[in-house]
Image (tube, rainbow, N blue to C red; front, side, top):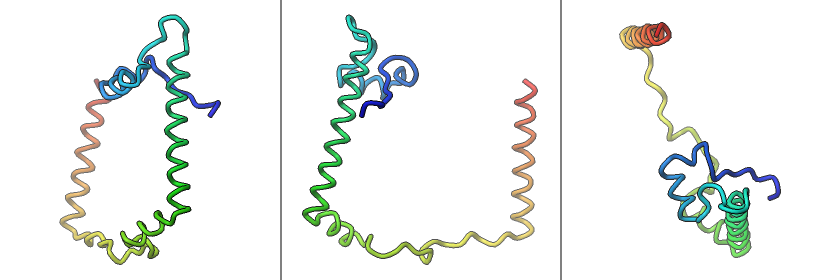
Amino acid sequence: MPSLEVGTLGGGTILEPQSAMLDMLGVRGPHPTNPGDNARRLARIIGAAVLAGELSLCSALQAGHLVKAHMQHNRSAAPSRAGTPAPPPMTPVSLAMTNAQDKSKSAAAQQRSKR
C-alpha cells in the first residue's frame, strides 16, 4: 500500500481515543531521531491488518463459512421493503407543527449568524 496516507502528529491525533491507540501501537508523535519513521510504521501496521482481513475473508469463502453464516442469519434473500414501515401521513396539525419547528430553527440560525 505505497500511497497510504497516515499521520501520527497533529490533526485528530490529539483526541483521546486516537492518541491512546497510537500510544498502544508505539507510534504517537514524531520519531525522536528519524522523522517519518512512526508514520511509516503505522502504515505497515495498517497494511498488515488489511492483509490479514483479506486472507481471513478468502479462507472463509473457500471453506464455505461465509455462505453458511449468511444463510444461518437469513441474509440469503433479497432485501425487501415489506418490513419497513411507511411514514405516518401528514395531517394539518402535524404539518403545522413541522412548519413551526422549521421557522424556529431558522430564527435561531439567524440569531447565531448575527453574532
